[in-house]
Length: 184
Image (cartoon, rainbow, N blue to C red):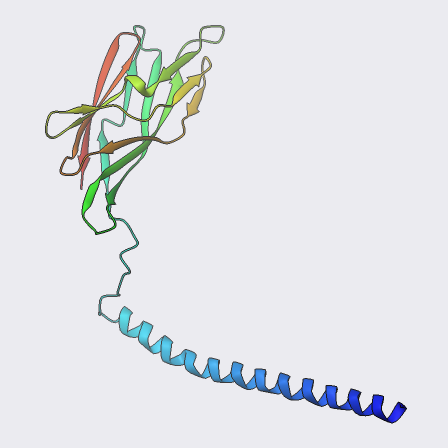
């Protein structure tokens, strides 16, 4: 009985030893193929264009001129446009479905301490397109206490295919300011 148990243990140890040895050989074979892939990456970097899967959306560079404006009857709301981004939307077949423009606003309340808070809903903002249409954003609300600043979450506009943004019109407390947008 003891001889059978010892024989089974020895057979198990030998099997495990050889299976580990086979795995080690497989790993050595895989590392031997790595230099070949490194050579192909140097070919890509040496001038040939890399192949893209088409999964990365096209992005546009946007500039707001001016990037900050004052609003309110007493110019108590100072708004700065930040992190402007535009990404082309596409259908599964690759055709353009429009552009998603996103941005953040930094609201600075110029009221003295003890004054009132400033709250701005972006539902009143309008994005003017090159075809003359004006569209409303998805809505966010930004609130800043006196003598403080607050950075909003991203607000977004969905621009229809074939149109480009021209200006962003901002409204607060019966005042208006326009920011020209340049897209490259």
